Length: 161
Image (tube, rainbow, N blue to C red; front, side, top):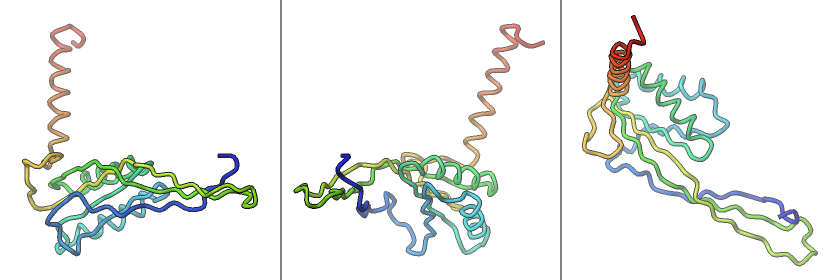
């Protein structure tokens, strides 16, 4: 590959993994270079208005962790949000051109499947039978139960007074 340089990356369009989304839904496309402060300022401002009921966060590749961070911040700021998470792959094509065109080398096309995540947050109840559904407050309930269990086990084992 030392004889080639990457000329462009083309992301193949892929449909959203959710059905029955309103046509005017706000989609926050999180990129690796996105600033969380900017994303959250816009998203929280929109979700605080009564007219917006749902928001969709999407991210792929290195932006997946930033996407999840944004969603967790949103859930802390605005309580009572229902969540459905979908994990998928997006296909990209990288076009590599020869550095020296006179060398007789052909252009290369590399197809990659990049992991991606789509997270739907809603003020209204969503289908709880849908895979990836999280009810409002379910995260807190899980950790409260875990901490209670750890505390009780600690007392039984004599770790605490």
